[in-house]
Image 1 (spheres, rainbow, N blue to C red):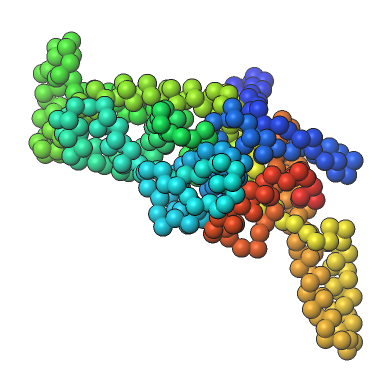
Image 2 (image 1 turned 180 degrees about the vertical axis):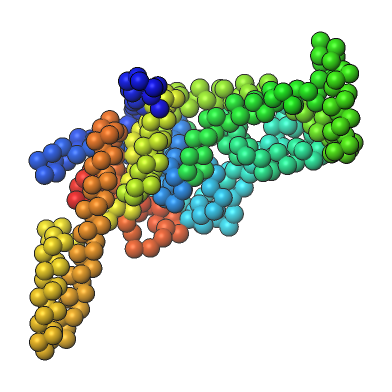
Length: 421
């Protein structure tokens, strides 16, 4: 929000990635948004991380998997990391389950012929947290930490832990010397939490730096020992309220975690810098619906504020038409004429034609509404390259379906207005 009485602060445009942007098609005498060249993005060996973000239910997981598969079929060695709890990615890739360890996907002969490779994994939040503790604490302290009930609660369900562990896992994958991948595709949590992982280190830092937490561990700290009498009163009260064992568990957890947090914070800062680096590209996924495009606008503007490189927008489930020249009004008029004929004793087969005309009119109305929404988004964010994927008759549930999505993402004529109009 702009300060009272002041001018609105201009929005920072996200740093453009290296993906080639095709000039958008001419629609109604006007130039449409630049088309996102997905194949150029995937073929650029300098692109090492692609982060797919967007609101829930827009096909973000499917898009991430389709991009990973297409990159592998073009000779890249790819691992796709999903943080979506719905586990749709495992089903689409033909795997019975995904876990915290990358598993090789049998993606067909095209990947092998191109010399590519496709691995997939799903973030296990608690297991990732356990791995961090085991790697950066002594065996005794790690055991003490892993069995602490407050740690178990934090690592399993504390708000923000999933986003923080997503950063940890991305950093681990990128830092592995033997990783064997030259591209990491990341699927992020739904809605605005898709970018909350950027804030997770600060959230955990605030947790540990809070006055109440500092008060609980104050007896172990130098100058604060001068306040030991007051601290003793507080801890005695808490001991009566919470119970002595619960208070000891809490103090033990905070003291142990505090010694590890410096390393957590440093690694998160390195991963944050990696997300700002030229080898990373963000792809925002949306559908041509008001809520999804509002979220997409939020992501685009947030990426600009955080100086993250934006590749472009993928617009999913766009309503298509086999007869774009037939307007909604003309279709409805023809349907009404047929109905009048039926009421006068016309042929019964005309009823099916009338139904098709009304269906076309409904779809044409949906296309017009989508076009207005998309043009409004493009007008507000003219620097964002975009590509459109038409709505399919069924869900994507296998590798062939992901391959089809990849082909649609990479069409040479994938201008947004062209698909919506």
